[in-house]
Length: 443
Image (cartoon, rainbow, N blue to C red; front, side):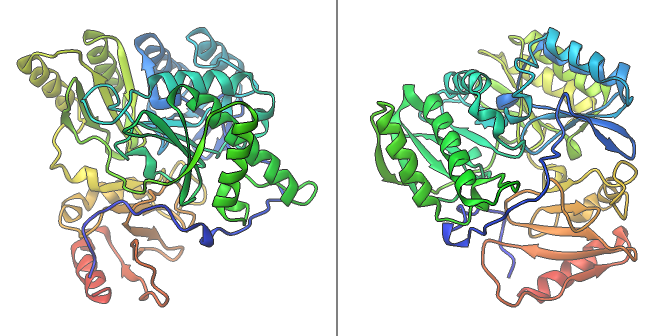
């Protein structure tokens, strides 16, 4: 039977599969634009999703003046601008540079860092990860070795609550109750305990160790982009990192990794913060501006989350003031209620933005929203079998078929050696019936 949504523990390192790629990393960035069907696309890395008002306004201006006017959030808390003119690269770089969103032209695609978005705001967790975030980003930008990281390599800084620890990062640093930082690589069952103050430097050393291991295990001219692709036990790499940390003078010890993970922030008030969810990660100019002005009225900071949401720190908000702010955000079309079915629905870009997509998945997901509320698991709509941007948690994949319609399959934490055949969905309006059939097949 399909279970309620949960976040699975990291995969066993014995499941790691060696992958060697024979082409360069084509991941888009701020300086390397991607040609999509709806125009050029830029992906702006925002470590920890943290923006100030000036930066948020600059992104809005870039979307309006150079692109389609909308801002799209990724599953790593980054921002994509779509519909860009082919010749706008230099102008976009100037805009980003002027507000500090491009601190290094040679490292901009490797600044992939997610961080617990409520860290320091709600009393949960064991440490405020903001010093780790700023320290790691600065260290990345001055490391010549780190330039070789793939644009897909991911760091996660978890304050101990376990939210970003479940995001399949290559290097995870998790705060511990005793003040230590627990560093782990990929799906390793072991972690290296280091002093909290050494967390940023240790994370960088871990990434540089990965690069050395990747170079040793791949053929000339072929590349490995992520820890899981090395094809070696992650524990082996973890112990090599521990040796390098010790050689660098970092006090460290091997521990058993903490595997418990939790969900991200729910919409509403959480301690000294307001949280909202962005349906399908797509923000209009009005919605972005309302978020930015809310941040401006409450301290000037905005935090984008890996779950396509946003957090506005609000130091000591008055309850009536918080309610007023949430009402304005809701009026702009953002989700402020934890009961909204939008929290259970995600989608790739689909048509018309992606040439590989077989359907306008965002429109179809919106049409079937009511049925999603009663689904046993969250739904992720994909325009093709690549399932771009899909979450790592349990879900129901709704994948567009080349011949039309969709195929539904359940992805759970339980390994199934002989999974049932997909349920076919000819029309999104029939989703409720298809979900019943899927539940019956997996019972």
